Length: 323
Image 1 (spheres, rainbow, N blue to C red):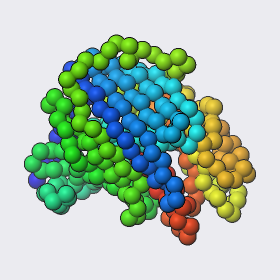
Image 2 (image 1 turned 90 degrees about the vertical axis):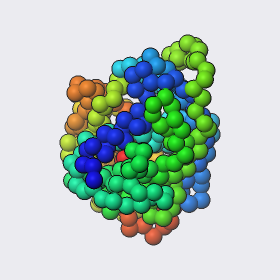
Image 3 (image 1 turned 180 degrees about the horizontal axis):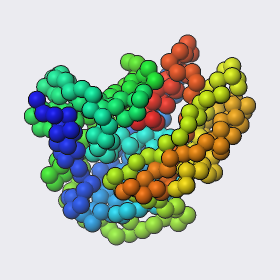
Image 4 (image 1 turned 45 degrees about the vertical axis):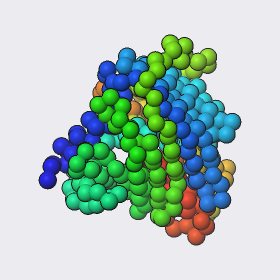
């Protein structure tokens, strides 16, 4: 049996389609996201990569759209604000499989086990990233491809299944992704076969008007609050204890321009925003250096005790955001 870190290194190398001198490719597809039992969000995804490290990613949900154009060390972004921002965040994270494996590798290896998934033998590596958050990556023992990822936090778990891998140069890219939580399907992504035959026009990577610039690197560590941002919130209101906020955590750890994406309680929203303003954050780090970063900040005090099906599913939505 391989060691946990060796397995994760193998899986990271096998999925490194966005590395230096990687083969140019274009891929596009569609997704269905179901954060509520009675509502589905359908959208499209498109991504282009060049061997020089230039890239373009476009995600659309209805009339909302996020465009990112990147190069080594930075990317620029333009997006419409709304709850769709959280969907953009989830889709982009899920499809960067190499980064997900490397994030798991950064944790403490807790267990390596032999299992079977998708009818094939796999070895599953469980790592602990924080005291109450674990990530399990299951790797096909024959080809080294990660076939599933499970994140466990606060009594809930979300599992992603990756399949229909296509070869891009010396690495592999999943064309099918399915996310489930508590037996419910939350997300399905279906991508077309990647096109490696055509060269991208330089105009594709021109910075869009009104875009904001952000630091970007392979060893990106996300921002984290230095204290419990839920402390004292539980007694603010009896019902609807969920707030989603989009904001920027600056390089000095302060939260700038928080904007509410979702909330049904004005009282709780005001209290949560006040809490964010007074709580220092550990900023994101790019190659060890503190940088400003875009964040989805979530307050959810219901946990897994919902009787209402829609709100329970929304809790699973939060689980997707925390990956």
